[in-house]
Image 1 (cartoon, rainbow, N blue to C red):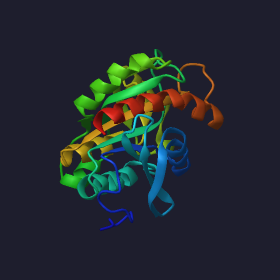
Image 2: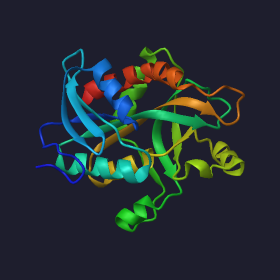
Image 3: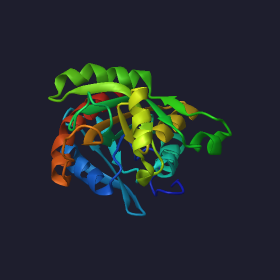
Image 4: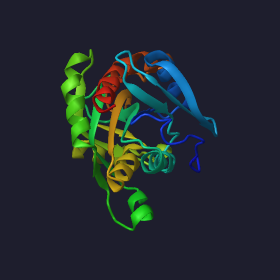
Length: 239
């Protein structure tokens, strides 16, 4: 039975889903890192791909779109109706921490937000939510095998991309947040609500404080390959 926002049925998705934001990036990930790929859903321009890693582990790939409402809808349906046990968000982030640099990889062990996502879902004033401990530990373990500086910490999930002010960035930096993005909190909260697992891995694509040039679209794709290798190793552990 298809869900409201996919035409996939339970069993067509793997237990582990890699979830970038961009549908084009999802296609690229499926074709570059998986074999015997099958498109099991294609609704609203968001395709779901299921295939196998080079080690024969079954993994799916699906884009989340942008923002907490979008990833909240998709993760809820995947977890509650399509048999998914772990979603690994793979994306990019900005950073305002002077000790972090463009191209670094972030493991978000906790997401903080000022959004009322949790209140709208459950009438609860919750603004911090943790990733799955087992997935974080796996990512930390495998991080030694990739050619990138990897930082573990709390990320900030923002709703308004153009609402980031210098004042707020300074506050986030003082709190020690390692990066800012737009989806992790909703993913973590939904996973926790449904007793599932979630993890967010991010490549730093721009910096608000350090004098470092933003990554171009092409540079992002190249830089993210190291993060994807990390994500695949974690995915295989739970597949």
